[in-house]
Picture 1 (spheres, rainbow, N blue to C red):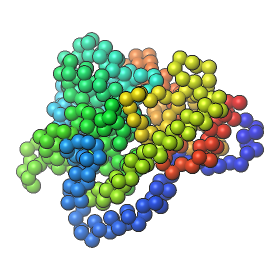
Picture 2: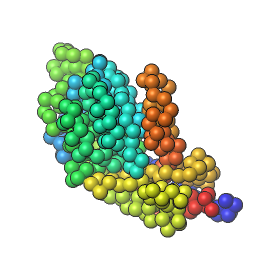
Picture 3: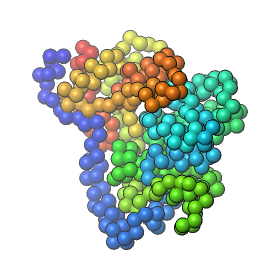
Picture 4: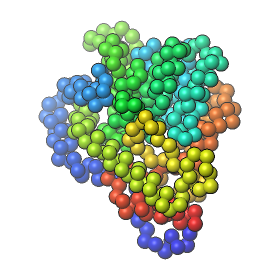
Amino acid sequence: MKSALQKTVMQVPMLDLSRQYASIRSEVLAAVERICDSQRYILSDEVAAFERDFAGLCGAREAVGCASGTDALWLALAAAGVGPGHDVITTPFSFFATASAITRAGAFPVFADIDPETLNLDPQSVEKKLKAGRSRMKAILPVHLYGQCADMDAFNQVAEQFHLAVIEDAAQAVGATWDGKLAGSIGLAAAFSFYPTKNLSAFGDAGALTTNDAKLAERMRSLRNHGSRQRYYHEEIGANSRLDAIQAAVLRVKMPLLQQWNTERRQRARAYDRLLSHAGLTSTGADSSAPVTILKTHPKATHIYHQYVIRVRYRDRLRAFLGERGVGSEIYYPVPLHQQKCYAYLGYAPGDLPESERAATDVLALPMFAELREDEQQYVVEMIADFYS
């Protein structure tokens, strides 16, 4: 460890949005100026154009813009008929909005465990829970974690068996595919986030839904606009969750570049894999002799690496060590949802979902963005190697 301190310290951020902005600055400013000149800011022609473009990007028939990814999850659930007295089965290893959207719809989240190799929701765990008997179950909500689609073949089969809707939490997976099908086109509906850290990011909060069901899309549009299809006439109580035109314009500038950016992220992920392996740091499968485990990519999945996450020994000590040497990192996620204080009423006990609980103690996300340089990645891996030396 002393040798690392003698090296030149390089600052490697977890994410540097300024690099992307520099490459599209003039186009973005022109788009924003166009909206300001139009003086049409909410649910304008710009939003309608974004929805057409985004539906095509996701291989879906319909897209509905909304105010955030969190709202997108709630809108998808509510439009699908999830409400008070229902259960929705999902993963405990995700951002809080996955579960809170279920609660917000009036339903109860039911948590199943994750696959330790991908950290996505485990279809076998879901099926086991369903066979145990949940007569109120209405939907399955798998999360495409870190940019890799969950096993949608399995979830659609389970959903058909138990007569459930499948709602994709695709907040981290725009552009990802499963068996050649794009995230957002595989379930009944899907929710996307354009939070500024996402692969396709807005300049603030923004979200969207996709579906192949025109009637479902119509209800989503009503729900996002106070439950109204015609101004001042309200068929149900919805929400104020409209996408603004400036965010739509920014997203339309970025969408044609998404495939390139995702390809570059995959290249950065392969570089990490190679560097970690060459440094003698990695283990895979049942081998636990090395300090770093690389997550598995399913053969049917095209991973777009919203995050590059590894499983490591002495995670918290390693993270502190990296931080002292200028390397950004993050923990996604330190507390599984079933162990969050606000969900104590659900009655889960320590050990109920062991894979999720174990992952929360050893996952670490390394710097990942399309503009990340190879020398920066080399430095990150050198610092990890120094820690374990």
